[in-house]
Length: 488
Ligand code: SF4
Image 1 (tube, helix red, strand yellow):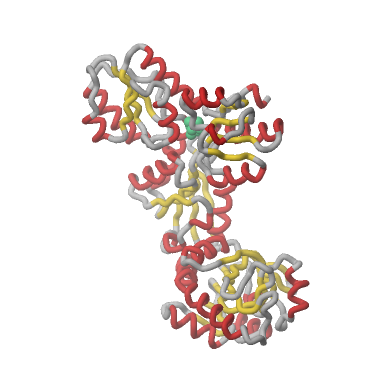
Image 2 (cartoon, rainbow, N blue to C red):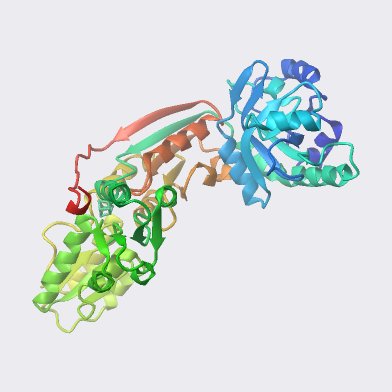
């Protein structure tokens, strides 16, 4: 049910999307309360014009309430990030924050004092239509703001801007309405941070504590935008190459590892290096060195563009040949069928990597293999845990950044089980349209994705209807890695 206070607002919403069920609530809290009493149980979305409070909220901007404040208390709006994300993807300017309910039109002087409460916008109806027990959302398209109150010549232009934004918002509003339903969430476990990622983050945090900001980090410490942003806020400076680091500064190598050439460059610049390379990546580097030192050609099964592979190849550039898929495995040349070995990138899909290795083994019977699989325990566990639940759900959400190899492999694992899957960096990335009809959702996260992001996804989905959450635990992970002495 789309609730529009004014006839004009309702007309704009209906003109843009006739399939939406709209109701006019009437202007002001008293009429809104009377309408609320008549409305059937079910989801409610309040959409209309509103007044801006915060200075950065301008006419034509949209404010999505993450909570509605009124004289009777505060009603949280958990699905706000989903709706805000959908509106932003429509190209609209969206702010997310508290919407304050009043019983009168707010004047300029009062606006300043209300802004001090942290609320972004003000209206007169939402707090009377709000209800914590049902899917509920509020979108206000801003007309009057600080410095541009109502009853000014510019109000007409601002009103038109507000109505245009309201009209443009309709696809997101209808998607929100279509996505509301009760749901079952099935959490794959293990998921999120692995020991190598925790160690790498710990190293940067300890380096910041010990040496103070800035601490330089070559490339993303782990492939996750949230982790990188948080460390940037604390004083970490991420660089692409060693040359960008001032001589004598502290530099951390990321978890994916570096080539020996990068280590030499750092030494030449007299940098205080702290190595956060995951020990399981170092193990693959050691294998490559061992094979190449005895004269073998080394097939490295992996993705050539990935930083881990870049670092591993650098151990023996003349001896390592990257094999990206089965087709390449069938065609890759080698000087002889003897003196060949293979290793793997740590974050590959298990079945795909095994298929490639099998082709190589058939072509090169003397192929030497690592004693233990190179695909790490964390990648293996997350893929197996997801495979165990993928067929039981309508949709899989994988929390992870787009450049996270192991997160992308999780999407592929679900898809190979026949279940659609999407990679989301955070809750606001979830496309509401994918949720419509998805009553059972599987949830996992790549090894570089912080656990709290999964909690946030569970919370926002709870704003679309009641959720039951179950966890499917494949195994316990108790692995930890020791820290380098430089940060102890
Ligand atoms: Fe290490 Fe595996 Fe984690 Fe990569 S995913 S950091 S290899 S434990």
